Image (cartoon, rainbow, N blue to C red; front, side, top):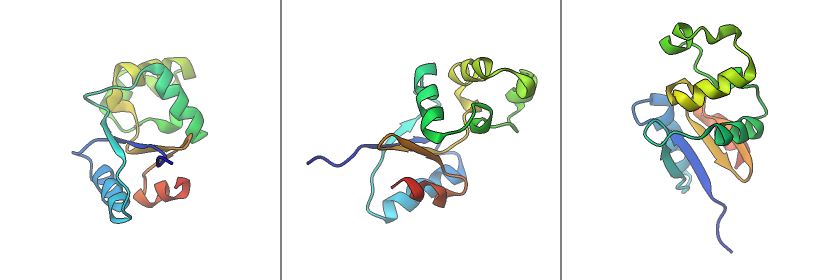
Length: 116
């Protein structure tokens, strides 16, 4: 039987993202690493992850990002937020671990352990 695939939407420049990857590796886990800024997820993938997280689009966004403020997204509807994340992946909160149809945001990094 093949092990279940797990994928980490990762930004190596982000401390929390690096800590989450290290936490998984310390447990002998090697997720597929998706450098989501270079390989942006599609809007459909973002919707699937939002559903797996069980959150709204707003809850999976980096609200402190300058671009979030510049685009006036604080009061934007769900579909506009999803489109903005697809067009500008820097707006996606990181890191995100996806495993067996579930997902978790690694803030703090230990939060991803709940879905393993």
